[in-house]
Image (cartoon, rainbow, N blue to C red):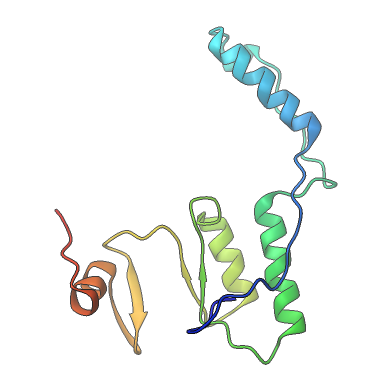
Length: 134
């Protein structure tokens, strides 16, 4: 959780990769380097529910936070390169409706600031002196 004065961790999960999937990926990469066509390589194994993805774990954290902290208003959910996928952001807005989701910023993206919508380039230009390169 990030506030104007302090940032606090509010939960955590430990990610454990699926050993079968790890071995398959390792083998698949080796076969790719050898030039073996995808159609001739072993197919990807089915996902094991005992090993949830990092995105699934993050959604669990959001849902848990909402359950235990209903009185806290979440204004934005930000995702980096890993969590910034469209699927994750869509799922996050289902957990926290009326919340902005922000991933890797692009100058053409629309953001809300003081109840006004504007592009990221306009926001940083007006309020932070940033000049976007073309």
